[in-house]
Amino acid sequence: MNFTSRMGIKVLVVAVGVGVAGIVADQRLAASPPPVSSAKADNPPRVEVVHPRRFTVAQRLQTNATLEAFEEADLFAKVSGYLSDVRVDIGDHVKAGQLLAVIDDPELKQELAESKAQLESRQKSLESARRQVDHNKAELALQNALAKDREQLGEGRGFISDRTLDQVHANADIAKADLGVAEANRDLAASQVDVAAATVEKITTLLAYTQIVAPFDGVVARRQVNRGDLVQAAAATRTTPSAGSLFTLQRIDTIRVFCDVPENDVPQLHVGDPAIVRPAGFDGRPFIGKVTRFSLRLDPETRNMRTEIDLPNSKEQLYPGTYAIVSLEMNRRPDALTVPTAAVGADGDGNFVYTITDNRITRLAVKTGLTDNGRIEVTTGLSEDTPVVASTKGAPPLTTAVQPLMVSENS
Image (cartoon, rainbow, N blue to C red; front, side, top):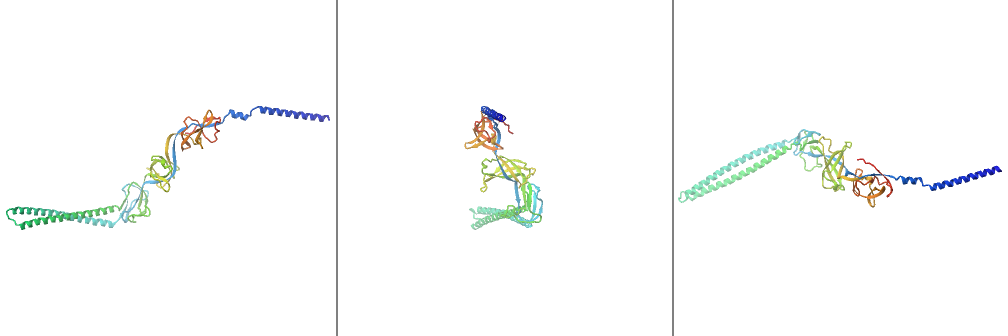
């Protein structure tokens, strides 16, 4: 009985002691500030900031392109005949005026011989007509002299009858008419000589076309004939531009790069704009050039403008027909004030950046220009000394106290 009572009293005392201790602990916790809040007040968040930097920016366009020869000519036969000689093959380098092939045309040679004979005959006729003119001139002079003498003898003396004088004058008139006929015959003979000479010149010119020569320095890209082939004079209408050609000659010491610029980018395109050409097969190796010319018109079907870039090719590394990727640098702006693209945000009020004022986040409205290589041009609203938060994403709310951390950017 006594043992039980004593145990009950001990349990009660212990319970009371535990309750009092709990109340005291709660009072102490309520009186002391939370440790987390103390940490936030003493350690503001760090924010990375950068300074605007000067860079060259440009509007860049990447498009497909094709490499073509600077000059290309399909060589045709002007006369028909058999090829008696073919002197070049594909890949051969030729010089302007070099003989490539010979066409044998016996009929044309015979026509030339006949025309030369005709010319010689006409020249002899002309010479005879000229002598006849000289003869008639002398005859006319003689008759005029006789008529003058007879007139002097007949004046006042009556030595010459009127009938005789009339005959003398008639002879002079006949001589004058004969001279006119002789001069007409001479002029006709001269015209016939001119016609015969033109015929000879024409046939000689046609015979010159039996020799196929190179129009410029270049490389034989195609050869479509062999010795002994019968070739026909080129027709005015062909199914394709090269149909019936004997050779195709290309000049490749300079290569034309053809690309198309969309209409939205055309206003920024100028002759001299830098261009980087990466032809297929060179593992991305760039060839540096400039915009040489453009067509000044847009294709109504594609709304693109044909643009050309000339690349020197003295080592003949580049071949016509190769596919390439072209990067055009348009509207180049050197020394533009820029920031990283992540530093610029946009909302209904326009573009903006975050900056640090008195170690607090503030907003600054800006106007932007070109975006190039991860940077964006800022045209108004910033100076080079303005610290800009490196990224608007994840930035603390406005007026938040922060600890700016300047970071360096790669050049």
